[in-house]
Length: 92
Image 1 (cartoon, rainbow, N blue to C red):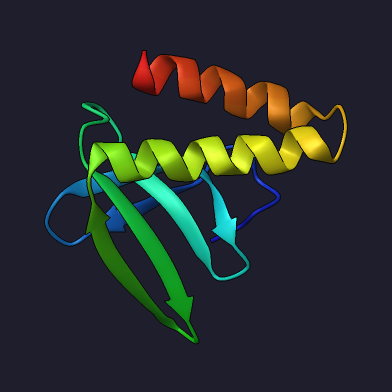
Image 2: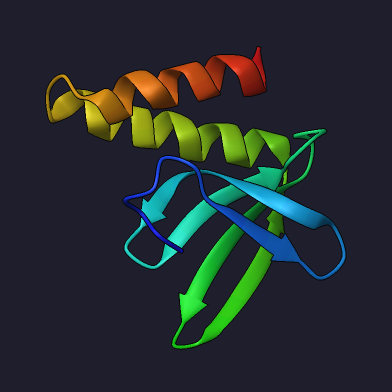
């Protein structure tokens, strides 16, 4: 996973291509299925292994809202604006 790239994709063994929504913390990121954006996963990197944890839409929304709050506190940023757009497209 590359936190510097504006768009990051990974391949899930069952659900196919996933799109990165945002970082959750240093070793975790929030992903969704590329086309439907109905299934959400917290992806954890442990060494060379990736762990996919499926989560519900409500939990994914809360994670994204928390990330937006943290970015808003740190002042104006391109990442906040971009993530706000992702939030609108995904949850509205």
